[in-house]
Image 1: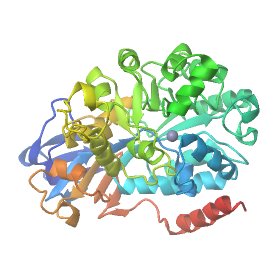
Image 2: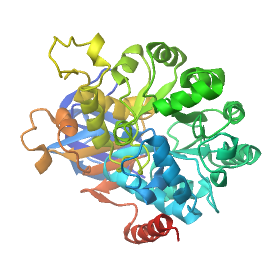
Image 3: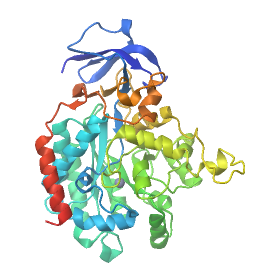
Image 4: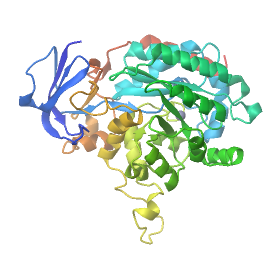
Length: 467
Ligand SMILES: [Zn+2]
């Protein structure tokens, strides 16, 4: 794989342990590892590949902690619906998903993520109608070159048993567990700098049974670094469902099933009280914050500053492409920063309202640097990884760069880090994953997407039209 030198770079957000800022420096990579980060005169003068990063902000690669890539096939459906209505509209459409659709949608969603600076993505594939397999998604991630955490998701609680999804899209629990074990034993790589890890991910409290949650946790914990993931406390409808069905709030419910701990992260966590945040902090349970999806479905605003102050590991997720409807991590960081400034959590405990009617919020609730930290180091911690998320010697060589001379950044050059979050995000100009250049001059190098996109359009049309 050889060596790569990024020189003359602006390194103002390394997110290393000391938050080192290097106004003009570089990054030296050998094989798939960062070997040096520092001022220009401390670095090797040359390498197999040299990139002059003059006027470029160089950052650690972005980490996406929640997604459903198959949903790239069904964007802008149920445009004005809340979560449960949106799901009920989409379940029959998703019931037409095929294994080819899994492969093509994974390529498409990962291409969009890579172009916008994501270097590690998780995905949560929880619906397996027709001939669908997780194997095809894993193959697509390998073909396009993304560092990937694949979830064997599942749904087992159909409508006839009190769940939300129709019976036609749920699976038998014994089959789910058997397939989960097969996938872990076939693909999971527990080693440092792994390009592929496996996750077990029953879909949500309203689409799987307590037994499947418990048994998935027992199975995952038989293996090193196999993590657990699900949706939690996303909406008030879900809270009501848990209170009625289990007599508990969502966090109490999952805690009773063994679903808190250093090896667990939950998506959304919008409706959590202070005690529940404390539980996540003490147990090391992580959170995937998905602000755009939460806005799109009017689910609410997650109390992220409270979580990070309490010590909860929080990462960002673009969430499924049917509820975002995009996969741009810089856009998600921007959304995370902006939404906190009008979040109701700030009414009482950080900013006095001062009696001004109609005024609410806190313009300092989340800074650009805090948002970018969620998208990098925070995401890495949420996925249980200490080998990615920062520009630091010994970390995996996942590095991105944006050209500060782009129109979008004009006038913001005095603070390049803030520019990357405040200004309208675009794609990145350079991306390196595992020491391999995957995006150069804004172009994806690892795959020609012309044919996959053509096929994507055909499959999407057939699914949505019912053919
Ligand atoms: Zn989701």
